[in-house]
Image 1 (cartoon, helix red, strand yellow):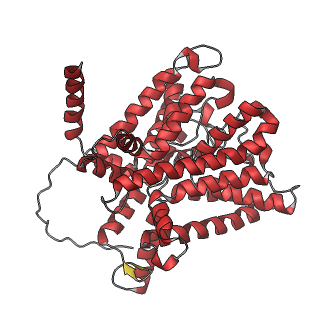
Image 2 (cartoon, rainbow, N blue to C red):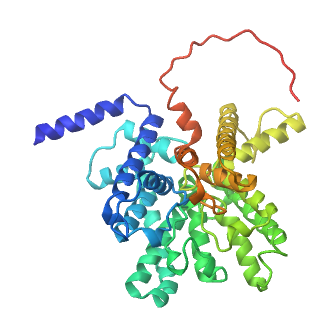
Image 3 (cartoon, rainbow, N blue to C red):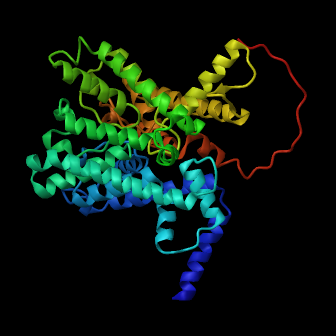
Length: 457
């Protein structure tokens, strides 16, 4: 037995040693998706006791592992308790990252955390330095337990009277984890298939708890760590934290106001003042990769749909449970634009100059995500007859791991579903990281080509 264990671990270590960090993470997520697919295909996973189709299970497992929320089956109606727990496990692991959970388990088992594991942790949570990875892993797990636990208790206050004690507690736990991980999966199919939180559009407790969990999970673990160290002393925050917090506040406030204006004569008609504000605020929060909805998404005005697409593309912040190109990417590009207009040297923010590599990475992430989303949109529109806005909504929702839809998900063809699966996977692993996983072993000669001149603009 020890020899078998040593041989198995030795083979796993040899495989890992030949992979780059991005490849290990990419293959790790792929393995988790395939394992989830097989579990969901078991008869015990469906309420009917029948085997669910491979493609539908692959789609669902990818959506859960990549914390997206797009579904071809209503979660409550189709999946049994076992199937729901499989999805919940995939959501939790996908939200925190299997590397983070693996490092934490190693800490619990008192195993040595080597430099390679710390490097993987750094790549997984997208931190700025490799030092303090063990401490950060502990803080992430503890913080997650506190936030999800508190959210579950608060949600249970509403759900227990409605669904009974055990079911109410389960609903509180499920939706707290789904919200914190920005997954968007729900069990409200008992009130109507694919209804999400529509029946709670004016419930302040449910809305505020879900929104708080989405925002906390979406600002990133680096920001958590900085806030825990420096409290409310803004001047002592890292540049990264300052940019994330300021951008998050501006996006939430601005998009809330825009949703209110765009839907004032549409979906908000008949609501009282507090209901209008709450609905607009929730629409602004959930579009940042959460996937829940308290109004009929398909009934949004075109202006609101376009605003949602833009918010889904931006997403949350680096090193978080959210997807998208990330807030810092957008801010770096806008700062570079402002610097170009002012004809100043370098990109500056809060009295600091950003590194040139940051601009290159931001540009690459922006272009790769935009190209993938638009490419998939063209493919779906060429093969199926859906409205343009609905297709754009679907593809940007997938690449941003949001999970919001106008209702076309269940009508996608096999080819279109594979396209959405690919977008969800790239959105969670990181589209640029996925591309780099194919090139990081290549050695490029350090030879500069002759300068060529072109005109721009």
